[in-house]
Image 1 (cartoon, rainbow, N blue to C red):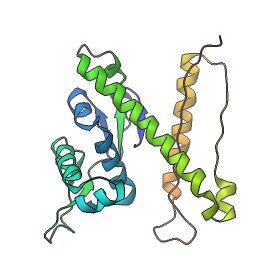
Image 2: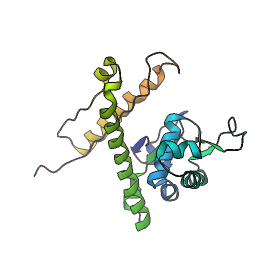
Image 3: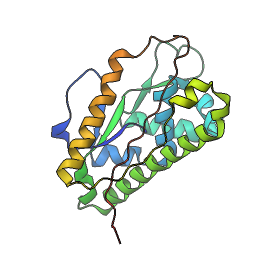
Length: 204
């Protein structure tokens, strides 16, 4: 979505980026497929109205308006005062990413565990949709972008500690590229999406 990282709150590093660690209440506020897509769209494409988002996502403006208000109630989106001067309300993301507290997996409340499952599976679904969109449109991009794309997988034998260390190093490397991003409007530059998936599998 979204930027999704499964770490404990104590491990979140301070910085200028607004990363929201999900707790049981905020998780239940965002664990809905349309809400997650609305937040992702606002984060990636910038401020928009409920009508614009409805057209982009193939939803009714009534549905997008309702779920935007729910996201606002939980602090994920907010009014955009620079644009909200006409008849229609403009919205913008109020966070840059979410961080998933691993304790939500084992919360005593089954509703929280259910919301956690929905959230994680929806993140995976959105990743799959993004890859499918790229594969279906890659011929529309210049050769240099097709050469620069990647769809790889690897199998390693690691301990949990080594897998955690590897994930941290990957995240650190990706974050380091924020400091060298070209300015908006730079010719040839585009948003690049990176997905990382790491999980154990049974060898049977």
